[in-house]
Length: 193
Image (cartoon, rainbow, N blue to C red; front, side):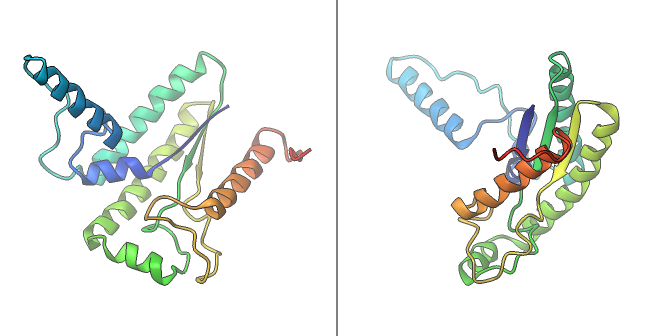
């Protein structure tokens, strides 16, 4: 069983002019800069960057199509091993219906309103594309966990930032994932023993 817990990075990088078919994370980019600085210090020219950024925000339609392609390629590769692939769309502030604490509200208020709408539109389209894959790949199941915090009261902190959680949030998510696995893989058998 392979579990993908994702959904936020695609929208984050698409909003930030990155090619989501091939891009570097912050850590990857930092390494690339250090590598080239060392290369320059040794008297050599920088390596040509094979990754080109976009000049516009990647539209949610394109982003969801790329996500579907990437996940489909993963499913095809995994089918050779007879592995199941569970894609879990992770929660984030733009999608949650959780009443936000004052601190959480301040975090979301720092976002541009168009960015919030971008995340929501991407999510809507991504859900449709990923549900389609369930009929294409027998080894694939999609679970939307974007609502996992919706019943948490306003006075309880969950989000550390707009897309990451503290221990309580990760505990809630892990319990949900365990329940999904118990139901879909083990027919409801309790795995806690």
